[in-house]
Image (cartoon, rainbow, N blue to C red):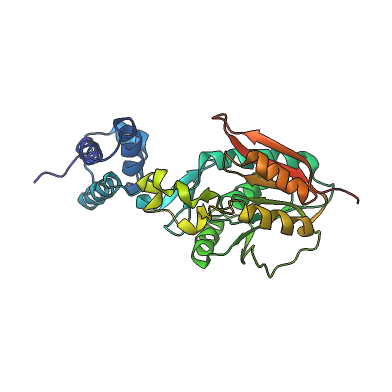
Length: 297
Protein backbone atom coordinates (compact mmCIF):
# COMPACT_ATOMS: atom_id res chain seq x y z
CA UNK A 1 0.00 0.00 0.00
CA UNK A 2 1.26 3.48 -0.92
CA UNK A 3 2.08 5.93 1.85
CA UNK A 4 -0.99 8.19 2.34
CA UNK A 5 -0.89 11.88 1.47
CA UNK A 6 -2.15 14.85 3.46
CA UNK A 7 -5.05 15.16 1.01
CA UNK A 8 -6.08 11.59 1.83
CA UNK A 9 -5.57 12.30 5.52
CA UNK A 10 -7.94 15.26 5.46
CA UNK A 11 -10.53 13.34 3.46
CA UNK A 12 -10.41 10.41 5.88
CA UNK A 13 -10.85 12.70 8.89
CA UNK A 14 -13.81 14.43 7.25
CA UNK A 15 -15.41 11.08 6.47
CA UNK A 16 -15.15 9.96 10.11
CA UNK A 17 -16.50 13.26 11.42
CA UNK A 18 -19.56 13.42 9.16
CA UNK A 19 -21.06 10.42 10.92
CA UNK A 20 -21.42 12.24 14.23
CA UNK A 21 -21.04 16.02 14.09
CA UNK A 22 -22.85 18.90 12.43
CA UNK A 23 -21.74 19.54 8.84
CA UNK A 24 -20.82 23.12 9.74
CA UNK A 25 -18.32 21.87 12.32
CA UNK A 26 -16.50 19.42 10.05
CA UNK A 27 -14.02 21.87 8.40
CA UNK A 28 -12.99 23.40 11.73
CA UNK A 29 -12.62 20.03 13.45
CA UNK A 30 -10.70 18.59 10.51
CA UNK A 31 -8.17 21.39 10.72
CA UNK A 32 -7.89 21.14 14.51
CA UNK A 33 -7.32 17.38 14.48
CA UNK A 34 -4.93 17.46 11.52
CA UNK A 35 -2.80 20.13 13.19
CA UNK A 36 -3.08 18.51 16.60
CA UNK A 37 -1.57 15.18 15.56
CA UNK A 38 0.93 16.46 13.00
CA UNK A 39 4.04 18.59 13.39
CA UNK A 40 2.93 20.51 10.29
CA UNK A 41 0.77 23.63 10.49
CA UNK A 42 -2.53 23.65 8.61
CA UNK A 43 -1.13 26.14 6.09
CA UNK A 44 1.85 23.90 5.39
CA UNK A 45 -0.44 20.90 5.02
CA UNK A 46 -2.65 22.77 2.56
CA UNK A 47 0.33 23.86 0.50
CA UNK A 48 1.67 20.31 0.41
CA UNK A 49 -1.46 18.17 0.11
CA UNK A 50 0.33 15.58 -2.01
CA UNK A 51 3.18 15.13 0.48
CA UNK A 52 3.37 11.81 2.30
CA UNK A 53 2.23 11.61 5.90
CA UNK A 54 3.57 9.20 8.48
CA UNK A 55 1.24 6.21 8.76
CA UNK A 56 1.26 6.35 12.56
CA UNK A 57 0.16 10.00 12.47
CA UNK A 58 -2.51 9.11 9.91
CA UNK A 59 -3.87 6.35 12.14
CA UNK A 60 -3.83 8.58 15.22
CA UNK A 61 -5.77 11.30 13.45
CA UNK A 62 -8.42 8.89 12.20
CA UNK A 63 -8.86 7.37 15.65
CA UNK A 64 -9.18 10.84 17.15
CA UNK A 65 -11.79 11.84 14.57
CA UNK A 66 -13.73 8.65 15.31
CA UNK A 67 -13.84 9.48 19.03
CA UNK A 68 -14.98 13.04 18.32
CA UNK A 69 -17.73 11.71 16.04
CA UNK A 70 -18.82 9.48 18.91
CA UNK A 71 -19.22 12.47 21.23
CA UNK A 72 -15.83 13.14 22.83
CA UNK A 73 -15.10 16.91 22.79
CA UNK A 74 -12.19 17.55 20.44
CA UNK A 75 -10.31 19.37 23.21
CA UNK A 76 -10.27 16.21 25.31
CA UNK A 77 -9.30 14.12 22.28
CA UNK A 78 -6.33 16.42 21.66
CA UNK A 79 -5.63 17.08 25.34
CA UNK A 80 -5.67 20.84 24.81
CA UNK A 81 -7.99 23.78 24.34
CA UNK A 82 -7.42 27.27 22.96
CA UNK A 83 -7.81 30.28 25.24
CA UNK A 84 -6.76 33.86 24.60
CA UNK A 85 -4.38 32.86 21.82
CA UNK A 86 -2.67 30.12 23.79
CA UNK A 87 -3.02 26.36 24.07
CA UNK A 88 -3.89 25.01 27.52
CA UNK A 89 -3.74 21.37 28.51
CA UNK A 90 -7.13 19.96 29.47
CA UNK A 91 -8.33 16.66 30.89
CA UNK A 92 -11.64 15.17 32.04
CA UNK A 93 -10.77 16.70 35.44
CA UNK A 94 -10.99 20.24 34.04
CA UNK A 95 -13.58 22.24 32.19
CA UNK A 96 -12.75 23.20 28.62
CA UNK A 97 -11.82 26.92 28.53
CA UNK A 98 -14.58 28.97 26.90
CA UNK A 99 -14.67 32.14 24.86
CA UNK A 100 -16.98 33.91 27.32
CA UNK A 101 -14.30 33.63 29.98
CA UNK A 102 -11.89 35.49 27.71
CA UNK A 103 -14.23 38.48 27.95
CA UNK A 104 -13.94 38.42 31.74
CA UNK A 105 -10.15 38.30 31.45
CA UNK A 106 -10.22 41.36 29.17
CA UNK A 107 -12.26 43.27 31.75
CA UNK A 108 -9.82 42.48 34.56
CA UNK A 109 -6.70 42.98 32.45
CA UNK A 110 -7.73 46.41 31.22
CA UNK A 111 -9.16 47.60 34.52
CA UNK A 112 -6.07 46.76 36.55
CA UNK A 113 -3.71 48.19 33.98
CA UNK A 114 -5.34 51.47 35.11
CA UNK A 115 -6.03 50.73 38.79
CA UNK A 116 -2.63 49.34 39.80
CA UNK A 117 -0.86 51.20 42.56
CA UNK A 118 2.53 52.69 41.74
CA UNK A 119 5.35 50.43 42.89
CA UNK A 120 2.98 47.67 44.00
CA UNK A 121 2.39 44.39 42.16
CA UNK A 122 -1.19 43.48 41.28
CA UNK A 123 -2.13 40.69 43.67
CA UNK A 124 -5.09 38.51 42.70
CA UNK A 125 -6.71 35.11 43.21
CA UNK A 126 -8.80 32.93 40.90
CA UNK A 127 -11.14 30.62 42.84
CA UNK A 128 -12.00 27.37 41.07
CA UNK A 129 -9.14 27.77 38.62
CA UNK A 130 -9.50 24.49 36.66
CA UNK A 131 -6.96 24.64 33.84
CA UNK A 132 -5.56 27.85 35.32
CA UNK A 133 -6.51 29.74 32.16
CA UNK A 134 -7.65 32.89 34.01
CA UNK A 135 -4.66 33.52 36.33
CA UNK A 136 -2.10 32.29 33.80
CA UNK A 137 -3.46 34.54 31.07
CA UNK A 138 -3.60 37.57 33.36
CA UNK A 139 -0.05 36.98 34.57
CA UNK A 140 1.30 36.60 31.04
CA UNK A 141 -0.63 39.56 29.64
CA UNK A 142 0.59 41.85 32.41
CA UNK A 143 4.14 40.54 32.07
CA UNK A 144 4.07 41.56 28.40
CA UNK A 145 3.45 45.20 29.36
CA UNK A 146 5.83 45.09 32.35
CA UNK A 147 3.10 45.24 34.99
CA UNK A 148 4.30 43.53 38.16
CA UNK A 149 1.87 40.90 39.44
CA UNK A 150 1.43 38.10 41.97
CA UNK A 151 -1.43 35.93 40.75
CA UNK A 152 -2.74 32.71 42.30
CA UNK A 153 -5.17 29.98 41.38
CA UNK A 154 -7.20 27.89 43.85
CA UNK A 155 -9.10 24.67 43.28
CA UNK A 156 -10.63 21.93 45.43
CA UNK A 157 -9.66 19.30 42.84
CA UNK A 158 -6.11 18.03 43.18
CA UNK A 159 -6.30 16.51 39.69
CA UNK A 160 -7.39 19.81 38.14
CA UNK A 161 -4.68 21.68 40.02
CA UNK A 162 -2.02 19.38 38.57
CA UNK A 163 -3.19 20.31 35.08
CA UNK A 164 -3.13 24.00 36.04
CA UNK A 165 0.42 23.66 37.34
CA UNK A 166 1.55 21.99 34.11
CA UNK A 167 -0.03 24.81 32.13
CA UNK A 168 1.74 27.42 34.23
CA UNK A 169 5.08 25.68 33.73
CA UNK A 170 4.66 25.11 29.99
CA UNK A 171 3.50 28.67 29.37
CA UNK A 172 6.20 30.04 31.73
CA UNK A 173 3.72 31.90 33.91
CA UNK A 174 4.59 32.70 37.51
CA UNK A 175 1.33 31.64 39.12
CA UNK A 176 1.01 29.88 42.46
CA UNK A 177 -1.55 27.05 42.51
CA UNK A 178 -3.27 26.36 45.83
CA UNK A 179 -5.29 23.31 46.87
CA UNK A 180 -8.20 24.53 48.99
CA UNK A 181 -11.99 24.49 49.33
CA UNK A 182 -13.78 27.84 49.16
CA UNK A 183 -16.62 26.41 51.26
CA UNK A 184 -14.18 25.79 54.13
CA UNK A 185 -10.91 27.55 53.24
CA UNK A 186 -7.69 27.15 55.16
CA UNK A 187 -6.02 30.10 53.43
CA UNK A 188 -6.14 33.63 54.81
CA UNK A 189 -4.97 36.79 53.05
CA UNK A 190 -6.42 39.41 55.42
CA UNK A 191 -7.13 42.32 53.04
CA UNK A 192 -3.94 41.77 51.04
CA UNK A 193 -5.48 40.94 47.64
CA UNK A 194 -6.34 43.50 44.99
CA UNK A 195 -9.00 41.28 43.47
CA UNK A 196 -10.69 37.89 43.56
CA UNK A 197 -12.16 36.36 40.41
CA UNK A 198 -14.21 33.21 40.04
CA UNK A 199 -16.07 31.22 37.41
CA UNK A 200 -17.62 28.78 39.88
CA UNK A 201 -20.09 25.93 39.33
CA UNK A 202 -23.43 27.56 38.52
CA UNK A 203 -25.64 25.21 36.50
CA UNK A 204 -28.65 23.92 38.48
CA UNK A 205 -29.02 20.16 38.48
CA UNK A 206 -32.42 20.50 36.82
CA UNK A 207 -30.75 21.75 33.64
CA UNK A 208 -28.68 18.59 33.23
CA UNK A 209 -31.24 16.96 30.92
CA UNK A 210 -31.21 19.98 28.61
CA UNK A 211 -27.45 19.96 28.07
CA UNK A 212 -25.42 18.43 25.28
CA UNK A 213 -24.13 14.89 25.78
CA UNK A 214 -20.67 16.22 24.89
CA UNK A 215 -20.80 18.25 28.12
CA UNK A 216 -22.62 16.01 30.58
CA UNK A 217 -20.82 12.80 29.59
CA UNK A 218 -17.31 14.22 29.54
CA UNK A 219 -16.84 17.46 31.50
CA UNK A 220 -16.44 17.27 35.31
CA UNK A 221 -19.78 17.67 37.09
CA UNK A 222 -17.93 18.98 40.17
CA UNK A 223 -17.06 22.11 38.18
CA UNK A 224 -20.47 22.49 36.53
CA UNK A 225 -23.45 21.83 38.77
CA UNK A 226 -24.99 23.28 41.91
CA UNK A 227 -28.04 22.19 43.93
CA UNK A 228 -31.35 23.39 42.53
CA UNK A 229 -32.31 24.81 45.93
CA UNK A 230 -29.13 26.93 46.24
CA UNK A 231 -27.71 27.94 42.84
CA UNK A 232 -25.71 30.82 44.36
CA UNK A 233 -23.91 28.53 46.81
CA UNK A 234 -20.42 29.14 45.46
CA UNK A 235 -20.97 32.78 44.52
CA UNK A 236 -22.00 33.51 48.09
CA UNK A 237 -18.99 31.67 49.53
CA UNK A 238 -16.54 33.44 47.22
CA UNK A 239 -18.08 36.87 47.83
CA UNK A 240 -18.03 36.38 51.61
CA UNK A 241 -14.42 35.22 51.73
CA UNK A 242 -13.30 37.85 49.23
CA UNK A 243 -14.71 40.56 51.50
CA UNK A 244 -12.12 39.41 54.07
CA UNK A 245 -9.28 38.84 51.64
CA UNK A 246 -9.52 41.90 49.39
CA UNK A 247 -8.12 45.26 50.47
CA UNK A 248 -10.43 48.30 50.71
CA UNK A 249 -11.05 49.52 47.18
CA UNK A 250 -10.27 46.07 45.76
CA UNK A 251 -12.50 44.22 43.33
CA UNK A 252 -14.58 41.06 42.99
CA UNK A 253 -15.30 39.51 39.56
CA UNK A 254 -17.64 36.70 38.58
CA UNK A 255 -18.57 34.84 35.44
CA UNK A 256 -22.24 33.99 35.89
CA UNK A 257 -25.23 32.00 34.71
CA UNK A 258 -27.23 34.30 32.47
CA UNK A 259 -30.38 33.77 34.55
CA UNK A 260 -28.82 34.82 37.87
CA UNK A 261 -27.42 38.27 37.12
CA UNK A 262 -29.80 40.35 39.22
CA UNK A 263 -29.73 37.78 42.04
CA UNK A 264 -25.93 37.85 42.20
CA UNK A 265 -25.85 41.65 42.14
CA UNK A 266 -28.33 41.73 45.05
CA UNK A 267 -26.36 39.08 46.95
CA UNK A 268 -22.99 40.85 46.71
CA UNK A 269 -24.62 44.12 47.77
CA UNK A 270 -26.12 42.41 50.83
CA UNK A 271 -22.62 41.22 51.74
CA UNK A 272 -21.33 44.81 51.65
CA UNK A 273 -19.88 45.12 48.15
CA UNK A 274 -20.41 48.44 46.37
CA UNK A 275 -20.69 49.59 42.75
CA UNK A 276 -21.95 46.21 41.56
CA UNK A 277 -22.01 46.08 37.76
CA UNK A 278 -23.66 43.49 35.52
CA UNK A 279 -22.23 43.11 32.01
CA UNK A 280 -23.40 41.20 28.96
CA UNK A 281 -21.16 39.04 26.78
CA UNK A 282 -20.76 39.44 23.03
CA UNK A 283 -23.86 37.29 22.55
CA UNK A 284 -25.95 39.78 24.52
CA UNK A 285 -26.36 37.50 27.54
CA UNK A 286 -25.80 38.55 31.16
CA UNK A 287 -22.40 36.97 31.82
CA UNK A 288 -20.23 38.97 34.24
CA UNK A 289 -20.53 40.80 37.54
CA UNK A 290 -17.97 42.99 39.27
CA UNK A 291 -18.11 44.91 42.53
CA UNK A 292 -15.86 46.99 44.79
CA UNK A 293 -15.02 46.64 48.48
CA UNK A 294 -15.80 49.90 50.33
CA UNK A 295 -12.77 51.96 51.30
CA UNK A 296 -14.24 52.74 54.71
CA UNK A 297 -17.12 51.77 56.93
